[in-house]
Image 1 (tube, rainbow, N blue to C red):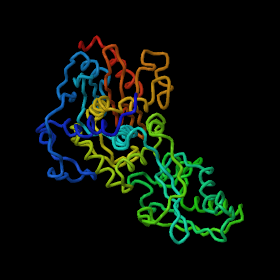
Image 2 (cartoon, rainbow, N blue to C red; image 1 turned 30 degrees about the horizontal axis):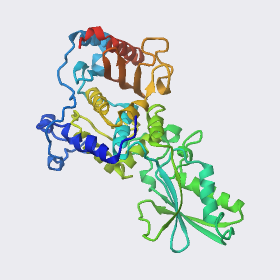
Image 3 (spheres, rainbow, N blue to C red; image 1 turned 90 degrees about the horizontal axis):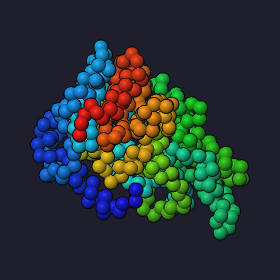
Length: 433
């Protein structure tokens, strides 16, 4: 897909985003949820709903009785632990089971944070790590959470701070370097279980994160590791270094001079890392950067506000983090089906779809449904934590795309049930156009 200009992006998506919410829809949905999910956000803060612009809205009534019957037969006696919604590109709700019941989504949460970041930041966005020279001759290293930041980039920053490549080529007698980082209490979302934080998938979320703050396990004190590596690198070059920590929320002086920056992989790679490989660190960073705030409460509030603007069914939805590791997250299958439908109309829809795993071919779905009619036909996001199994995505059928979301909280054999749900949804003869 050709890259779109900012002006076109604003005209096609950002302004009409509120128009996706036709008059009266907020009243139909009930009180808007706050970022904490505990108190309703005041409706006075919500934008006025302009007329609809013709994009499909997810209907609320099931329109394909045959598929609905197959769905009920598939879950059999475990209906109470499942939420499943299936929709088509016209917004028809083909089948729905407990579609408005909030569930723990696990990593299906990443579909929200990546959609939000893609819309807010665009396809050309990259995360930057930057070295600044301050007026007093010291340096400050700042970052935006590049998940691929590694030792070679760190060594380049160290050499520049020492003066390598400058006019004299001589290292100063003392290099004073500040590391700008988030406070320790912000490194992990509050709801992440303490045991998870020791594993690579639960590594702390920091702005300056070598190898995503994980080696074989999580790096528990990333700034300390960074400080040690910087001192070692500079000492090997014969320089004396004084490394200190400052708050990343401390503004740079107006006279700071940018010496060098290292850019991350482009947005499509970041999205793929988050969705195809289900990388928690990247999803968390994208949520924060999309909101222009590393305060997680503010980031989830901004993302919730954006979702409301899209006219999505928000009853019971609660955002607690960007990755889905926090068990306080709550999504509904009907919400996820509506989000997928909405993003398929987005100017960057191809980038969003391309970021997902593919059945039998790529990512977390590479080993599923190999050699079946589902192979290569479902682009989706998996979600797995203890007691939770979820899958949501776009199913390619002979009659066009179908948007499927299935979330189980406590099912005994969720994988086989999900496979059967996808095969039934693929049978277009059940639901004539």
